[in-house]
Length: 415
Image (tube, rainbow, N blue to C red; front, side, top):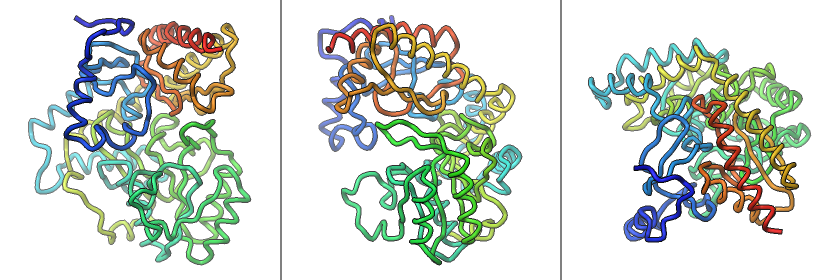
């Protein structure tokens, strides 16, 4: 029987027991962003199941999920049509000596859906895709310098990892930095790169952790496109986090700016492990010549799931639904904050919201809010952008707002 999230277990929880076991056999008990996330008190590390917009931890507590597995779940956990497509393919096999027909089908789907794309190739993780884009850009231009925005996240490989531990200066020798949305800074970086400019790599919008999110300005997007055109360099958009949530054709479509290459992952297969690079014909030959590969990159099950995901997203107008539910959440949080006399800042697209508290450099307020909301059934994050899925409906948002009200009470009591 499922216990409500508000019930606290006085004994050693299953989550705590798993953490203790993991600490003995896994370095630090956990790695990467799940270790660095520093979730608030009471947050589980281990989960047992999920369905729709709800997740259940190993202690049986259920939450309305606003992290969507850190972005991959677009249509809801265990979406029946997607799982049916994946299971049908799994019955035939997943890892062969080469790809299945589904790879060609999926590439055709992406080329038909994404306006800038003349071709597609597949990987497994977002870092695979961003690295492939950079490699293809360098091969196609025979240059080395890649411009990236300060603080932007493009993966956990040495050339782009947010951590410098174990990374050498040589790994980043040909990165040149600029400030996101700052045209003058971008142009200065272009000048610094000179005749060695291979690519400008930008996230769909500025989503650095722990700071207000920024949508790209038209002027910035146009300046990036113009700089690449003038230099013969590649404009790369990192769609790994935002892809499919803002616009099915690409996050910069509304700005009228299209990239030469784009990196996709997370949402494209609704939780099944898949990434993709899409590109235009200018970089087709380079994509043919570079050596990028992985033992599981041709796995057919995730590709079948991706085909179903893209089809459902097209047929049901997913970005519009996410936008509507995100606005409902945003408006509700604003009203609750005003009601409780708590100052918050909400930024980013409604589909991928971020909520920060004023005067909260140590994130004490954010953590208090999230811990209290969690106890009442809503899984928020105090610093990272969150994610809406197509499974979130009005009733789910309203239920989450009831939990959020408890969070605002907890913040008010800190004073």
